[in-house]
Image 1 (cartoon, rainbow, N blue to C red):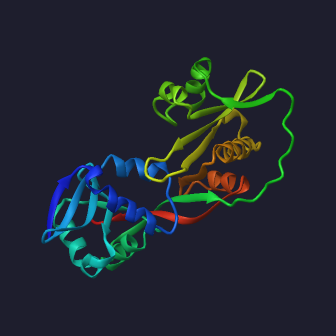
Image 2 (image 1 turned 90 degrees about the vertical axis):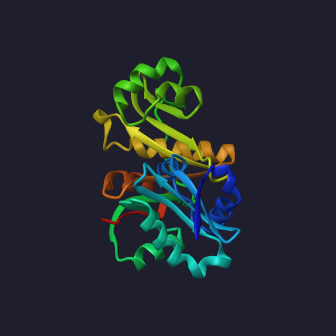
Length: 256
C-alpha cells in the first residue's frame, strides 16, 4: 500500500462514493473537522483505491476504501494507524465500514454526539404573540447577539453577512438565535441549531426557533440536519419536540 498526501479535490470522486454509501448524513460539526483535515490517497499498485483524513495530526476523521478493494480494508486501516500518531477517531455510525474497522480493534468507544434528521411530519404550533418576530439577523442585532451568545459561535459578523443567523425577539428582547450552515459535502443539506437567552430558558423558545428553521429550510428546498452533544439532554428533548429525530451517533474512539 502506498499513501500520498493530496488535496481534497484530487479525491472528490471518492468522497462522492463515500457520501453515496452512507446510511444517513451528518452535521456541520463533523463536516468542519473533516474539511479542516489533511487528506491522503491510498494506492494499491497504480490504482487509487481509497483515502483517509487526519485532523491536527492526531484525529482520524475519514477512512474510505472503494468497494472492489474492501477485502483489504482491515490491513490498510492497520497500516494507516501504524504510520501516523493518531490518538482518536471521529466515527459516525452511519459509516458502516469505519464503525466496523474501529470495533475490530477493540478500542475504547465514547459517545460524542447525536445527529438528527427532519421527521418530515407536520407539528402543531402555538400562535406567536403579536410582539414576537423571527427573522434573518442584521448588523444592528450584532451587539445583542454577542452579549447573549458569547462564544457559542465564532465570526458572528461574517455569519450575519452570509445569511446564516436568525433572531427571535419579543419586543426589544432577544429571546434566542437560530443558525443555518449549508453543507459543503452534502448537496441540498444544511445544519440547523439554536441558542436560547439564558434568562428565558425552559419556556419553549428553542423549540419555536427550530420549528422556524425547519420551515425556512423547506421553503429553500433544503433538508435540515442537526446535532448535539451526547449528554446534553435538554438540547436533545428540544430538537425532538420540534420534529427532529436521531438514529445516528458520533463516536469518539480512543486509540491510546
